[in-house]
Image 1 (spheres, rainbow, N blue to C red):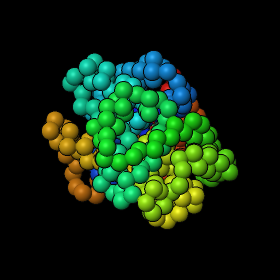
Image 2: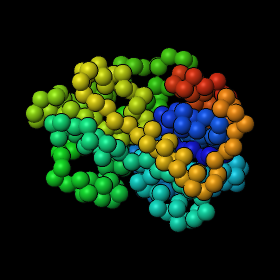
Image 3: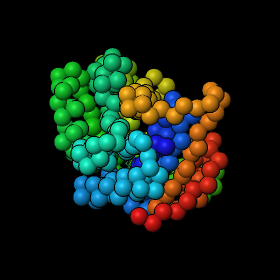
Length: 275
Ligand code: DGL
């Protein structure tokens, strides 16, 4: 069983890639929606929540590996969790600056992430390693993850797409011109796991030629490598076997179920957690 957590439903974008890479594994996903958003809260809150969720995943599900499917929690807490759980393989996510650099022709790269991620020492260090190779236009997207969280509703439709479009428009406008000509941003890093779920409005706003870079697939590959190295890959009887997916939330179970159904075509019942 692999544990996965995020501040809310955003980490489902990582779970989607994990399922594709490791279809025979069992996963337990926690959306900490009752304590979201993380991105505009202080580190102490994010660290306390990350610790509580990790302890719960270990005690209740005996997880063999942990994926922190949240850029903000990775930046604030992964070093602490690794020190506190040395026997547990832990994978985190960070904005995909290096893959974006490999794709960009104009060398002007947009980075959408939470305020917490962008102001973290971890992100500063990552940016520092790439200094001089491109211009990174970093936009703290206040309110966007929260709007995505609330758009989930309980039904199959997004409840307020207008609000989401307005958030996307405000943040992309603040970053300047997008396009493939010199001086324009031709590559956009989706540096928060909630943002792949607004790719459609972003595509509408920015046109067909701007590339979007998310982190699901590299994180899933890294998880496979870690499990292999730790000899913890589930054997799986045949290639057709599929693992179980357990959904847990500290917010509204109906909202997590609806998001999993809409985005992952996953029919699973979400249970409410009090932690
Ligand atoms: N999904 C989270 C991330 O990747 C954060 C969203 C939030 O709670 O602010 O950063």
